[in-house]
Image (cartoon, rainbow, N blue to C red; front, side, top):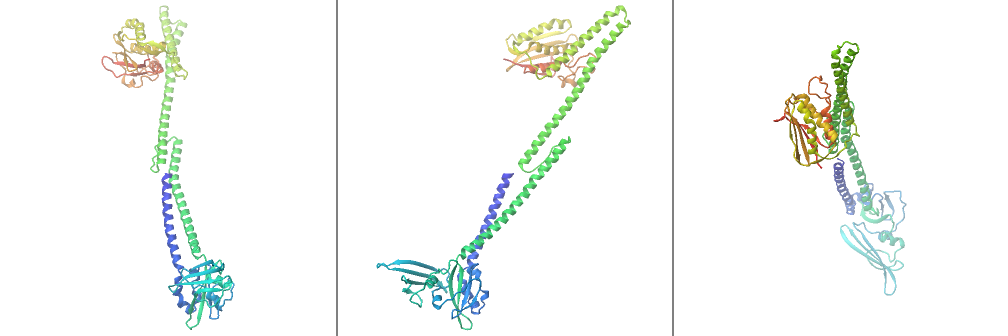
Length: 512
């Protein structure tokens, strides 16, 4: 946005500068036309009528220029400026003054003759009444006229007359003359004291005007751009401030803005941040709710067996249990205590895995032999419980970095769930196959399957397969399994039912 504004600012500044320069040169040309010395000939009528006060001294002679009007006896009859001291002039003096000319060209040269004499040559080139003329004078060392091509009435010049002739009368003014005859027939001479730097003075005045206009234009443009940028920047900042205030109050909403690209990016980043924080807040609320549910489930899972143990122990203590049933009561107490101990151990293992310092003891093992050994250990017990097994493990040596104890715990949780929630006669499937740089382990069964309402949350804590918790299951087994598999840099997922499986877990572990 700033780059675009700087470019626009520069273009406008160049346009203004160009316009002012054009105006400046037009003004300068006008000034030069106004000081055109030929215009004095158009003033003869005014001079003949002796309207000297109307003579445009400043326009023709510069801001410092002035005029004297002399009669035939060289007396001053009018002067336009009383600030300058007057002096007397003779007819010979006036004869030396150059005629008023458009471009008087006076050349003074020092000459040394063959005899060693020093002479001065004065050449005057002037226009008078649109007639071009030349005058030339040669003077000796004493300003005596040796030769002249002109109309000087004297034989020699004084120093003052020489200065008048060569226009060296003053360093500030150039002096020229113009003769005219009034309406009553009297002859007059007007002496024109012109600003020697009349052109430079006009240029300087025009330049000052140009700089003044440029400064005003630049200042105006700067103020306009400051106001404009302030509006363009202040508006999105105010909008962003409003959104931040709303965000601070917990109101998550998308802020829409159309304008400079930089602010659009800021608003997009703000919306992205707002979306992430909103999602984080929702996750926090979800975790808080899960925490509350966890505490409630833990309380329920602990309270139920403890209540049973308490009730049976009190019945035995009070002697209300017949002697032949005491052994049965004690077995139930032992069973509940054992289940309670297993539940507490499961809670402990789960909380231990949540700790950031939790790690496995990994080592290279042949995963095929390991899985065969695991199935062999569980085979007898599962067969006694009425379950059938199908095993598909290749006769290969495939090595993986595993923690045998923890991975067995993960497999046990899946197998125990299958045995717990399926009827006798259910077939359990164990298979292993290589897949890219991984091994794919399938633990499945053809039992009753998992209810659809809990399939998406099957690996979350305290999710159980029944609507009631009467079997006292903790619902942590599969959560522990998932954490163990992830700690092995692997993945676990519940596959969609497909023959012959109604429930199937796929575990992927990296190979060495």
